Amino acid sequence: MANDAKEVVLACVQAINDEDFKKGRSYVADDMSFVGVLGSRDSGDAYFQDMEHMKLKYAIKKAFADGNDVCLLYDLTMSGKTIFGCGWYQVEDGKIKSLKVLFDPRPFLEKAGK
Image (cartoon, rainbow, N blue to C red):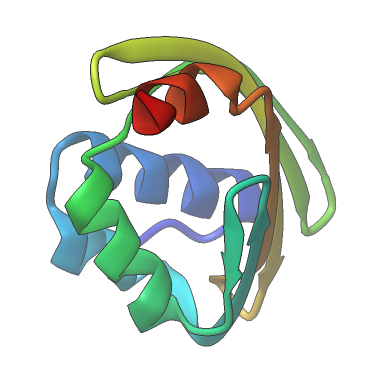
């Protein structure tokens, strides 16, 4: 199992890319907080229900760590569209406790609005 904050985050993202959601969920706290441009979730289970449905793929461009804070810059592919995004992960006791993401959601909203 990953032991430092950056390793935990990278292992979780890899599990999501591999669609191994059970493994990915093991890196996330039960009371994980997620805030994104399209909504928020207040538990690890709710976050992973979304991940299973959306089938996101991350292409990480850069990973930074400062203690328990990890920042990923990535290309995110969802529904056949790829956008650039950023995620700020906070790790406590070896689990992702919070995640805030930023990206331009317009490519996804345009599809939904048509």
